Image (cartoon, rainbow, N blue to C red):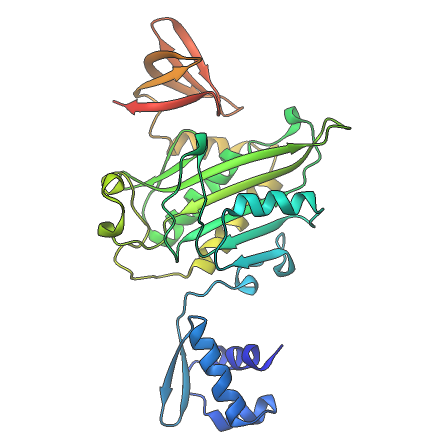
Length: 318
């Protein structure tokens, strides 16, 4: 640990005011070095209150690998970026370089993030933009329903930290109080020699704390965030850690399909009339069920249609 990291660790541990002299003595550096370290920490976004008798650490929302890491996801494999074109792209490039997995890429902001069908993201700084790289080495038929697993993991994590109930719009959007707060995207990379799925990338964009008026006008009625008033009961680190802890717990629990039960319970599409386009033809029907493969079964006048991710776009829910 360098001086900056040592100062941060001691301030966090103490909680109350910690004198510069005491910090210097415990770390074995000069008081000037402590003062410089505090300034660097403040520039990074940490809130440190200065008192006549020393420094006091206040709750700060700075992304830290050590705070996100858990048993299945080591800090050494968590990559934090101030700005990137897309964490999905970062993860796919890392797969080509044989990155140790699971690996997580988290950015403060994205300049070229996108969702399904190439739709662009509104990506202001200070939210959660991340992609998880996995190395399953399985055939496509053997793969877990990663998108559904991730949706349940995120939904349950948000429920826990907000005390509210999220809903899932088939197949990959999380809604809170009628507004979209999170989108999930999954992509698979195959090995042409073996025919196996060598890597899977799960990308998420989650609106953590955005004042409603700062959304583009066309999104203000559709999009929301977890903490629009800026009052943060948890940090982004804590929420990210909880999301992936849920995800790996669900993954470790397979073939138990309990996540499918939660997914279905949280769906606000089931039982409602939906309009969609499939293979260039427009249909309207009632969403009846979600299969074990994550398909949406819709009863139309032309019979039951089976909708899978990638071939349809839900246009309206009545």
